[in-house]
Image (cartoon, rainbow, N blue to C red; front, side, top):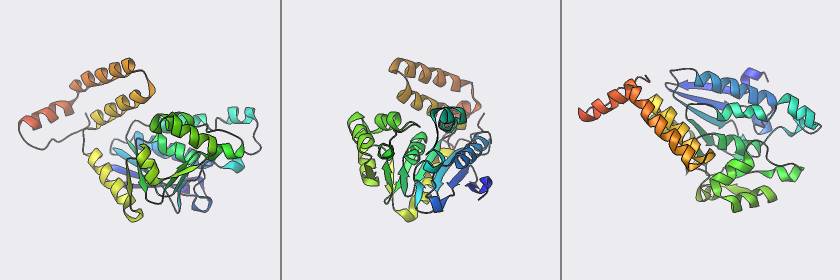
Length: 258
């Protein structure tokens, strides 16, 4: 399979749907697949016509972890020089909203990829977990950090130390996912949510995402400073003027992203 076919891209107006496409390997996150995903994400992030991105998986899995065959014989220097894990930071750095539509296994790196997204929708058949402990390592792409912030230290500790998986229903109860959907309607619900967000003013969406992310990654004082800076900054946008005028005039706003 060529690198270009490892991630399939479908553009539906302002929404891009990126599908991980190694179904025979349960979409295991090989270096080539990750590189292809990064290329697609950065293209979408730089395309003004695209406002929201959905990531999903082909077949029975969202992504069933990293490609163990690619790491089995690696040395610490191999891991450092190839930058295999650190370059995943480029996924989390996407400025536009990213929705994970988790349609099956989201294990190890797959769970970490979902947690790099901004919103997670899960099929009723989805399963989440960080089973790295079972092969002698620990999560290395944010699994110990983002999972802890999402579900709390005690549940995260149990999942990381035992390698246990949780169902979509448990993930929802723990606060890891936004909602659980029937398998047949998962992508449609992701599309509907994406279209709702895409109709909002793009600059406000981008700065709101930055501020909410800061709440999980900084102190309250630092987060409040980012929130206030972004709040003030938006008063320089045409969309703020349009949005407030439309509210006063009781009409639908026409946001330009400027």
